[in-house]
Structures are given as structure tokens and as C-alpha cells.
Image (cartoon, rainbow, N blue to C red; front, side, top):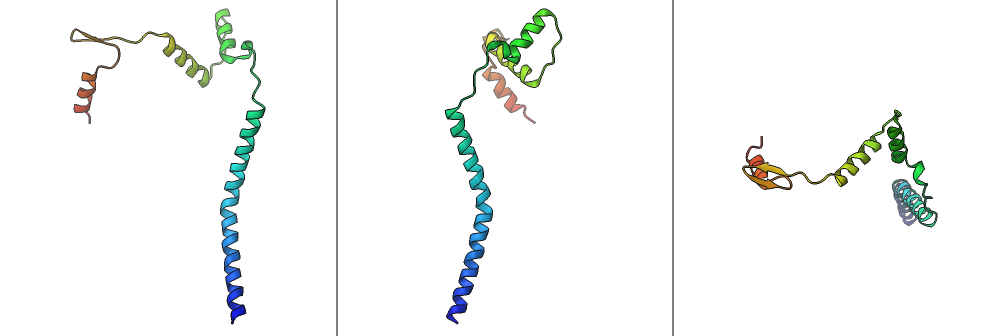
Length: 115
């Protein structure tokens, strides 16, 4: 009787260990791979490329020469970021008052008019 109880306990324990390993082993290996990749990137960082390899720089040079170049989503995003940095802030004129952004009175009005 005692031997039967011990055997049942070890079978249940083995099932529990198997399920635990089945669930958490993939997570452990993913975290281990992420950690090792991070360590590798810290000790061996990417080499900086010269400016003439930069796609934005190459596209700018080609457009200045009048050549057609393919434009990717990243290029459009970089252009928008550059324009936001270079462009002065927009000043709104309403009811004789100027504002350097979205007027707070308009925000209140939009909140009252919401659908």
C-alpha cells in the first residue's frame, strides 16, 4: 500500500515536472537568446557607415541631380521628422488672438461638440 502511494506520487510529480518544462523551457530559451544577443551587441556594436552610404543622403544627392529614386516608408518618415524639426511653429489667428499651437478654447469646444 505504501509503495503504491509512493509510486502514484512520483508519477504525478513526473507529470507536473514534464508540464512545467514543456511550458517554461521555450520561454527560458527565448530569454536566454535575447540575453546572449544583447551581450553580443554590447561587446561588438555595429560599425558606423560613412555618410555616403546613408539612404537619405543618397536620395537627397540623386534628387538634386534630377534623378528618380525609389522612396520607402522610412524615407517619408525621416523627411517628416526633418521638416518638423526645421519648420517654425504654426501660429493660429482667431478672434484677434494669436496662439503658438492648438488653442485651449478650441479643445473645450471640441469636447462639447463630441459625437
